[in-house]
Length: 193
Image (tube, rainbow, N blue to C red; front, side, top):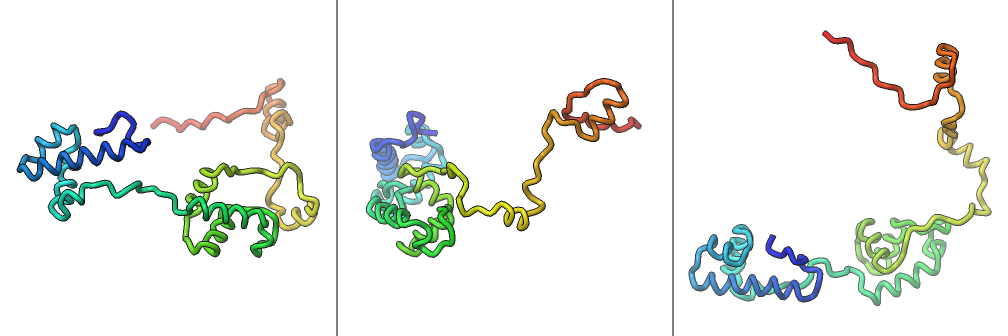
């Protein structure tokens, strides 16, 4: 890698990389070989070949920086509007309960700004602006535990506590005549052939 000093996290780095490409462009015009340019500029031969193709098609202008590749899709002004929309609550946007999910924020962005963002991009956008995942501090007043149990009987089965005896540890205790600490059971060994 040509840029071990940081790889382009500051504003100066793209200008530095553009300078390297322009030096290569002048050397293309002088007729120098790809391998020599790569060695002198301390870049890969593949990069020099890619730059040479761009130079042939568009000249020195094709080697200039096109700007940051990951410029934010939602501007700061749009995000301020999005925060206002999120402040109104999910019910104001037609959702049944008062929970914001990434998919719901994605729908608000799609409706309001006509932008199609992935859920991961929505998360990065929110995180960049200081939003975080939060769990409710208390249970909802409207929660009906009985209805939840009826809807999902196969879920929410409490796991046995590790100190409570299970059938397996009880049988071992009877057989050995002493307490056994529950833990992983060693794998069965296959008989050798």
